[in-house]
Length: 447
Image (cartoon, rainbow, N blue to C red; front, side):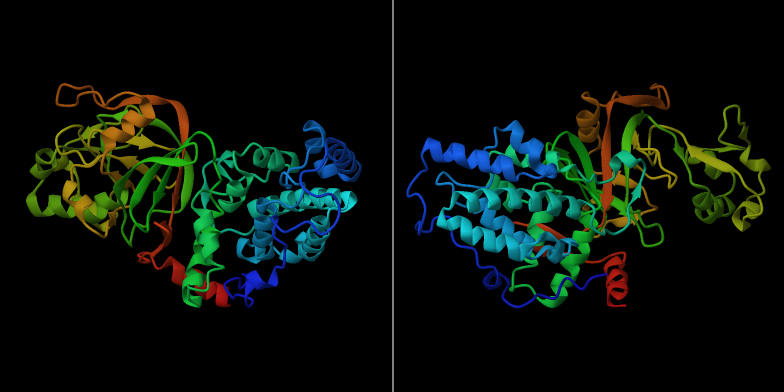
């Protein structure tokens, strides 16, 4: 892994780009005439290469990176600054032609129509290359439940069209809005000398995690962070609600993964994982007797398939279950103190991870909430149900039908990550590393 946390001197000073508001030294003064604008558009059309030709043709060859005086805009200057430090994005700045772009920017400031057109086209080509390279850059592993969940490397036309649609191009570049919304604040900190080398190492690690999550500027998705044990619901790139959650403990760490939440299971059974039956519940039955099973509203089954039989717990060899030589399945009946609460939300995955309600409300009050066996327990399952399903959770209770599987109106992506550095106000919050994953990544980087 590239040692991108090492800053190469005064980065800002190394990038010499004249201010777009600088006085005009040559060429036209003030705003260009319509005739000059027409000449500029013709020059842009002549110089636009294959990767950007369609973009410019669709907009009548109007420039993207010039201000009202047809000089490099603030967005252009900021983009050059970002690209100069592209190593922090996992991209080799040398492959973006930075030195040539800076030279073209200086020439464009003088006002020669050919130089302005040449700079405009070159910057669009470099911007498309930069965005595509960032989206394809090395990232830390994530388990994707579908290829549709992986970051997409967009075509150059899509890169430029999306940027051109922004209300403010300078704000778009500043926010690096082609990446996940959490990316830019961390990325900016890599160029801030106020942060130590150790802090930049941690930021670098978390940038690599964020590159595994698509930008997702439109639509809805759920983001779960296991480091802070927190969940956010996003709409059109902005969080609309958040809540505390309980995630996996050290022995049952919640994996970094992605899936589509496809259905809600209302009034669910809790199908107890086999290792919990063996390592925990069997010991309780041995201690308190077979009556403990019914007292705690469990059932013992000989399988999970349709037509499986409920067993009398008095007929089970619980010592064999505890030793692992006898295998039975257990589930907890819906309602009451059921471990799943009133609802669970499923996104199919081999790891058996899902979101669910919980009766153990006291755990959600703790500062450190890495306490589950791997699944994600929700502080406000009712709010999640309303957001996902567009309606409240139906009333539960003993008379409610068990295990009502209700498909979502539309599947919603969920991303479970692990962010030990997060934006907070105007700065960053450096969190604990409860799973010690940062340390392992840094050791690998040093090697």
